[in-house]
Length: 363
Image 1 (spheres, rainbow, N blue to C red):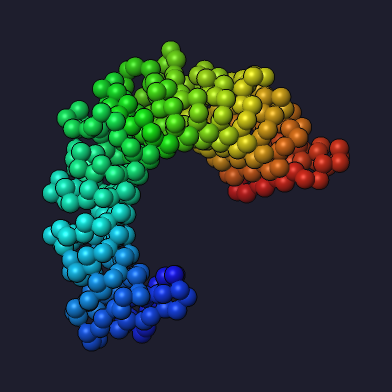
Image 2: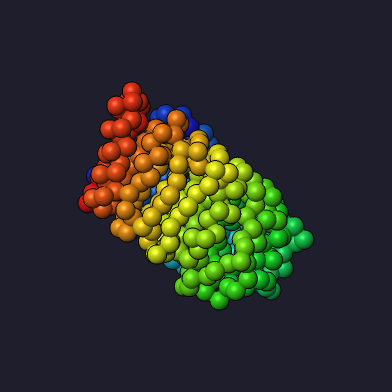
């Protein structure tokens, strides 16, 4: 089964497919969708939605807001995605089979109807309190507009959520609520400016991917406790340079992104026992001048990316001797950084290493 978006002289709003054969539907007259057609995609003009749709066997609907009047008839719908509810919330009342929902906002009244929902993407501000108590099967929650964890949430002792994206952590109580999700594999969270304790997420023993943003202030943590199973880590804004050693000692870390960090006046010194499994390193928009490192500090590094590091002086020359290094990418950095990247490439070519690729783009 496949799905395509089509337009037929501006009159065709849907493409329904079975296998590789698209069915084009024209809204100038009434039509029906037969039971072998399971996917429906709409990107039409509102004027095209004046007929009645009898798609009782449709399982997936991807469309715009104006198509919502047909939703109440699709009782077997499992996948629903649209950009604007536009007041048609009542049409979702009977969609008990929904497994995947992408929606601009979610209210308490709506959440009570989705006990079988597994994937939820909310693109706008939402009421977060009822999500977990009313959706016991929810596995993946993505809040595009970050929302704070409420202390009044009636969350079970433990919840089976695996992905949580867009949650605000303002105090120790907020962080403690995260303990209700011991099965998290992916977490994206923002720490608010009022945070005063040392972040401790070590209890998330199954966590593999973590993105943390520290907003509004510069903090000097005494210590920070990451889950040791992390493979992918992204840190942005106020993380202190002197705590990078705790990141380097994560035993399973393979991907590291450092962005918008203020290391001004600091020198990043890496050590022999750090970043032993790191394969990908990105430094973006960092206020960092000096970086002291060697090939022994990143023994498995394959790709190095630098973007808009205006303060940066040069790439450590020794990194060119990392045997696994395949690519260095430099975007919108200063002349000295670009020159250091080219010198590394030239040195490696002189030593017979033709495998290293260097990409330089922008000034």
